[in-house]
Image (cartoon, rainbow, N blue to C red; front, side, top):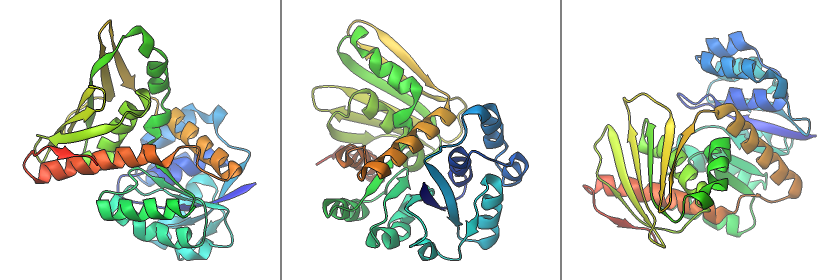
Length: 306
């Protein structure tokens, strides 16, 4: 049995409770709703038959407030609440850093990286070049760090990848989503990169506004993509793939399935002793994310990647 510690939570991110419930196979819908996430309680109820991963269990929880930690513990049957992240060391086999405040990931992750504990870091891994260099150097030393958006494991993306052959050479991908570039742009990038078998990005140009990112990405081989993220639009995450022979709309809705498959891949990675997701794939996505942010800060300047 793999004992997992969960670090949470950041505003608007329900992963500490939802992921713990998926792993432990139990949840308290009333407590999850009281925490502010009735939609999570609903999709856990709808997928109750597939909850629980027999190879692992979330045994420890830490968040910035003891009361919040205790609340999360009640949502998913987590036995131990700690008063510091370091208290988990020696009691867990691995840690999931289930916060999406990328600017703080290095600080949260460092004690576990230093202790040699396998670590999954929720999307995005980081949001600046200095932190990316830190994670890359630690991975180069052999430290176990895995990070991605669960969009990589979305059924809708896997189906699209399987059907690429019928579209001919892909010339253009458009992606549309909601909320901000750093926290949610990474979802759209993960979908694009995973469907296209992780092509090499060359540049990013963000011509959007404060409330709406519009980012053009150029890839090696001629593929172009545009990612549109607006704070105040409705709808799901969607991609349109335009090939020389046909086109396809990818409408991504099943978040539960992608979360579960992401967690399964991480647990399999822990069992095998190394991340099953190669770091260069995550690194390319984060470099593109950072380039898009830098472009916006520089008034829409094209930012070369590498």
